[in-house]
Length: 131
Image (cartoon, rainbow, N blue to C red; front, side):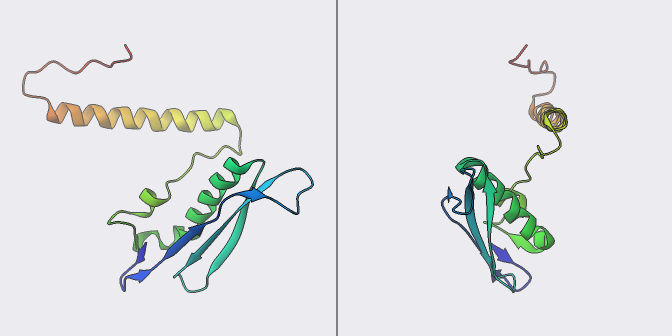
């Protein structure tokens, strides 16, 4: 990643998840580090298993980079490309599902708009394969 306008290199490192030695519950942790933003960041994210620890490390990395989002690029793209926002689940499955449904509606609407622009004049609208 690069931090503009001076094109300072920003490096993000993610370690392999491992059992958390401080946990008596069998929890896991995933270490991550960020350099190039001034003061280096070295932290862990914790989860009930390796997958959750890794997912939460990605969330924490995005949060650490968020204040720099307007100046960060990754392969010519934005922060969202490297570390996309995750749907929050900590407020319950109902809210998470409503957010997911909203995202799916927006994506379907956008896809429909793109298809309509690309369709030849007078062509019938594309059918939804799920119907």
